[in-house]
Structure formats: C-alpha cells, structure tokens
Figure 1 (cartoon, rainbow, N blue to C red):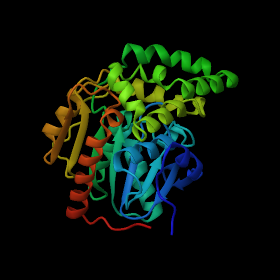
Figure 2: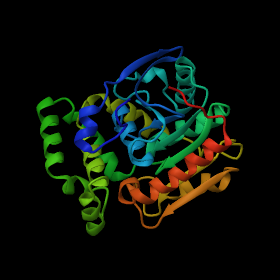
Figure 3: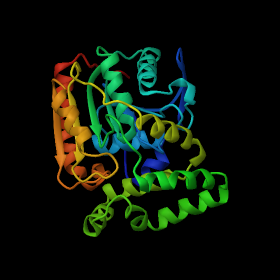
Length: 311
C-alpha cells in the first residue's frame, strides 16, 4: 500500500520523493510522479519548479486524492533545461511527449499563474490528450510584469550568487511568514487567518520558503516567461474542446481578473469561480472554496472523458 500523497508541511517534506528527469524526444523534463489513478498534470508559476507543482496539486486536490500527479518543472526551472520548451506552445508539446513516454493517454491540466499559457496550449494543440483544464490565478494573454515584481527580479539574480545569503533569506522567510505573506495578502485580518489555518498556512509558508531553495535554477524560466508574456497575444480559446475552469481573485494585482473572465466566457465549456476581492494567492486564502470547486470539476471531467487509471 502506497504512502498518502499529501500530509502536513513537515510530512510533505519528509515523504517527498526525489524528482526524476525523464528523457523525451523533445528533451528532458524533471518531475515528481506521485500517486495512482487518472492523471493530473500540475504546472507551477514563476519562481517555481516541480516542488511547487506538487504543492499546487496538494492545495487544489486535497489530501490523498485517488489520482496520479505528474508535478513537473517547466522548461527553465530547476532540472528542466530551457531548450526543452522556450515558448508555451513548445512546452505544451513537451507535455504531450511526456505522456507518450510514460504511456499515458489523457490528463487533466492544473496550472497556477505563469503555468496558464502552456496549459491552454496543451489543451488546444493536443485535444485528445487533455481531459480538462483548471486555471488558478493564471495569465492567459498579454501581461506586463507588475512593478513590485519587476523590482525584485534583478535583486533575486544578485542574491542567487551568494549561497549564504540565500540560506539566510530562506531561514528568515520561514521564521517570519507574516512578513513574507504581507506582499501577497494585503488585508491583515485575512493574512492572519490564512497563516493560522493549519493546512493553508503551512502550504503558503512552504511556498514562500521554497523560492530560496535552488534559487538560481528558478530564475531562467522566470525571466523568459516574464519577457514573453509582455509580448504575448491573448490566447484564443474559442475552439477549446476540453472543459475549462478558471479560478481567480477579483482583486488580483499580479494577473488581472480579466484574464480569467475572458477565457471563461470564450471557451465553449468554460466555467468561472470569481473570488470576491481575492488576490494572487486566493488558492490559499480561500482554500476550502477552491478545493470544493476543483473536486466537482475533476469529477465531471472523469465522468465525461476516457480517463483511466494510469499506475
């Protein structure tokens, strides 16, 4: 009997399997392959990697779901080299090739933030391989980097060159989660309530600290994404065959709510969960609502697709 897919913060880190790098015809891709059942492809955002993809899956799907999670590092992040897929369309083809390599027919894609474009192109370019798309606070078109994010990127590049400083910042972030969370949750009451939650708070704290693990290996993809999204056209989803669920906070000041509204309205089978006044980390501040809606959506996808268990 396999170990539970997810647990608390300490249990998650203690039981986290080592990432593996899978060689495909389109290049290597790093992932954590966890659980059994129908497949979910989990795609992280900026400054991410396979560890954050797994955290995204844990947050969205709940504890120990009857699913197989492929938590990947997108190209340019951690162990997946940038040449494996520079633009979202190439990344989408890489995902399809990964499924081929692993002998998997179909998957539900769940993405957060900067993972959105490649998730949408996976569904558009490989409609027989995508059983559904969940977008959480995702970019879906032209996105100028917010000033507060743009100001931090050069500093991150400098910090990454000083290992001792990176370790110090990770320690400081773990010791002062409220200070770290203040940048993404402006409402002090909501921030305190989220951090006090034994599940949501632990996951948010882990996400914040994870940025400072292998920091230098998270920057190439982040810089490539931000430069590309500033010039990227809105992704046309009018021909999208897969069902789509967009979850987005109306107060998101990193990726505007309009990104979710447009694709939910345009997709033939689009749905929208608008989180009133929610910010970019609505996945954590409104965890119960997100989990409930994602659970319902995944159940519908499984009922209307050919998803089968992929052990």
